[in-house]
Length: 70
Image (cartoon, rainbow, N blue to C red; front, side, top):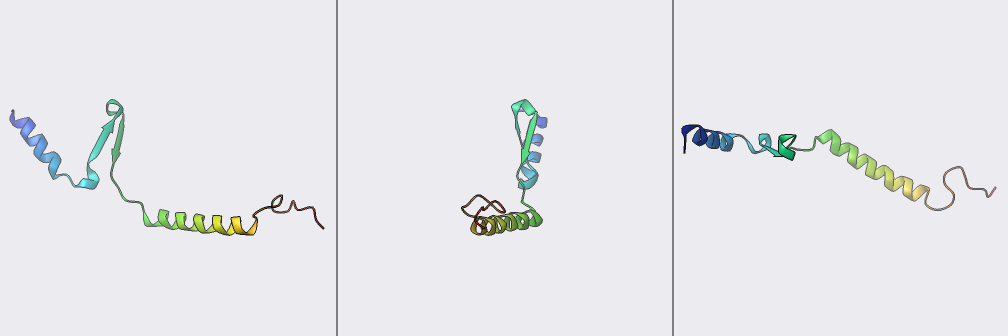
């Protein structure tokens, strides 16, 4: 085994896990492990809460503003 191959293997293992990349599609697509940002988690939670509210408030009937019973 050449020195280049030994060094490249050792340097790849020294890269932190969240910075390591995996290549797909012949190297055209790269993916890496990461974390979801806190602001994005907040958006997910808010959207879920809004969906629950909307589903509870407008469940059934023709929809908001379309109920024909006057």
